[in-house]
Amino acid sequence: MKKPTLKAPRLKAPDLSSVAGGSRTGQSLLAGVAVLGLVFGIAELRAPATSAATGGKRTTAQVERAALVCPPPMQGVTGSTTLTLFSPEGGTGSTGTGLLADATADNVLAAQNPAQPAPSAPAAPSDAASAAAPGGQPSGSPAAAVDARVSLAKPGLPATGPAANGDTAPGSFAIATGNLAPGFTATQLTSSEQGGSGLSGADCLPSGTSFWFSGASTTGNRVDYVTLVNADSVTAVVDLRMYGDKGPIDNELAANISVPPGKTETMSLASLTKGPVDNLALHVVTRSGRIAAGVHAIDTGKGSDWLEPSADPAASVVIPGIPDDVTTAHLVIATDSADDADLKVQLSGKNGWFTPAGNETVHVKAGMTAALDFQFTEQTREGASAVRLTPTSDSHPTPVVAGLRVDRENKGRTEAAWLAGGNPVGARASVADNRAGQTKLFLTATDGDAKVRVTSSAGASGGTPVSKDVDVPAGTTVGVDGIDPAGANGPYALTLQTLGGGPVLAARQITVPAKDVPAFTTQQFRDDHATVQVPQVAADPGVVLGR
Image 1 (spheres, rainbow, N blue to C red):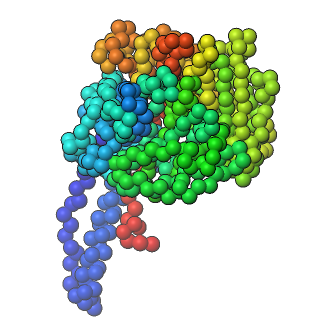
Image 2: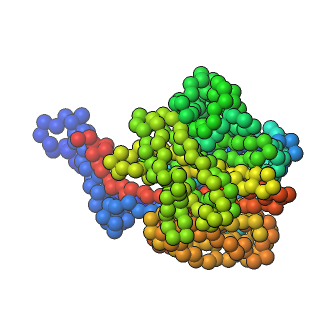
């Protein structure tokens, strides 16, 4: 919204020649004070109309610029990666620009110099699309000099394209402005033969200063990598803090890692843990600057995927997205607190939360990790599910993070995906890349009954959007099928809106048929923070005149 312009009237300096004893300097000072008094008197009398209407309360403003970062594809020599952008309909304001480009030094530098400045909004929280440019620059359209791989034309219709070829492809970044910024999302999907036939998926996230991952490993056939992508204009300095079942793992090679602008760093976790470590948790934290972090796992012959980043440490954790045909699951919980954590373990079932036999509670020692294993059979499985961890005593809440590996098995072959503790969908959330006939949605209502609207966009190359409302009883996980758009051609986007009740956590699963066991990957829905709260500002002459 264009800000009103206040025009100050022409002010005539008062005639002070008749003031007794008034020196030339004194008269000038008195004249200046009089003029300032007139100016600030007008400022206070003409306070913004919105302040009067809202009583000085905060108002809601639409995000006008969004910036996301995608990890490097980790696709090997023969793999392929698709990158998909989407912004839901409903954004207002000027016609925006959306693009995705390789995170190279030239592209990052070009993105810091918007060609056409636009009004900016305050930045959204760190787990949502940032309203600032990658380097904290003012809001505006991406510079024409950015070499875009994918361009987004309009809200409501996804755009898709391939990542760079080869096993050294860099990470990428995506920017949207104007009416494309609210709810802007990007998804990366990789098909690769590394470690066996597998599917790896990742949501592209804003740059940040802290990322948690739980469930990494450097034992057996596991080959895990941490990736750091700097899409900002300043060098980031990063520490990798690792925790195992015996406590923190110190290694000077994991500290003070410099990541220059437009660079992607990929490091083997095995080179940092000083020997095999299972049930590993990783906290990526910056000393300066911002990065996007990821952890990619390959369990040779048993599957590969990205570990989802966990929600920030909290006393209670919910992990959504357990498939209805899972055979085993491996839960890894970590705390960097000075206190131990005692947690109650529950699964969502057909009639609400229940306690699994043999896994009723778990104890996590301070600064360490702990693990639980679940076995699922046709007799014990209650369909799609979620895990909930809560303190056994309300008087002793200890913040934890958690990750869950889930495995499908058939004829001795397995395929794995890694889930993580999440946050509620909130008002709205989207995932950009879904495939007709291969997509399933999981909705979990944690505390109360909920109603969720599920909207499927047209495909990137055609189709008709569809929408349906879904009821989710408290403590249950509902698997939603039949959500493909009519005549879908190409990847389509899924958008969720919480209509009432909840809160609700959600994940979508893509399954690709393969011999013996299907390849699959699961990504969570995250509140898109399409709007932000803007404080009302009142004129205050004291800022200039002092107290």
